[in-house]
Image 1 (tube, one colour):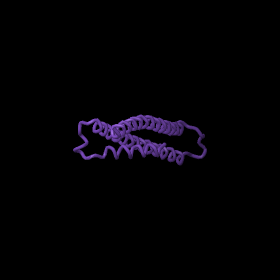
Image 2 (cartoon, one colour):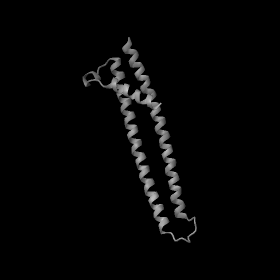
Image 3 (cartoon, helix red, strand yellow):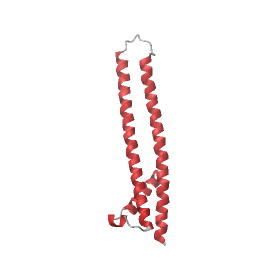
Image 4 (cartoon, helix red, strand yellow):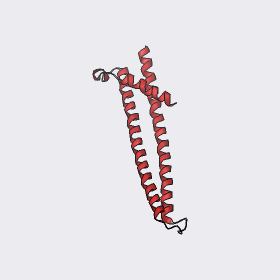
Length: 131
């Protein structure tokens, strides 16, 4: 399905790639081209924002992992296996993974909605050009 989404975005980019002078014409195909351009831009910005959030989660995960590793190095060998600080850090890692899964799910849902809209707009544009 990823190949279809990529080809969909390429087709939309080729339709939207009109000179600025023709981009703002008042014909129906011109309006649809503008909507296609906006939808492509929304998909791009959505992916950029989610990539940024994924990087932040990864950075946070690295910080927590580092703290956990440093804590383990400082522990005497005779310390009990469980103690609160270590368990809190492990729980934080699980929370970060849960956040990452939720973010992935939201990205997929939003992207699917925008891709459906893009497909509909491309189909309308193609139908208008055939007439």
